[in-house]
Image (cartoon, rainbow, N blue to C red; front, side):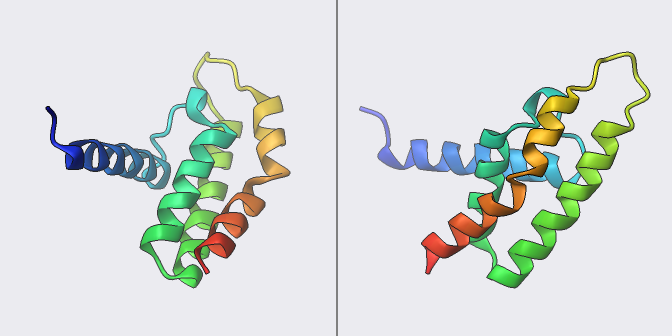
Length: 101
């Protein structure tokens, strides 16, 4: 039988990895999607005060968006995915912060 806390620790580690990549601008373009941002927003809501969560989430969002929009490498940029996230990224954090209350 496995340790029941092991899954929780691994899940937290997975979430932290995404948050770290998001903040360090190393999130791959293929991971720039609603599910990834929802996980990041959820981590912020669980681990930071609302004001700090909003500031860090927004700052990293804009930095990642600029990075992905202005890529110089030959990989194609999925502008449709970027535009789709532009319409919902703020609401993801708002929803998880409201659920926290």
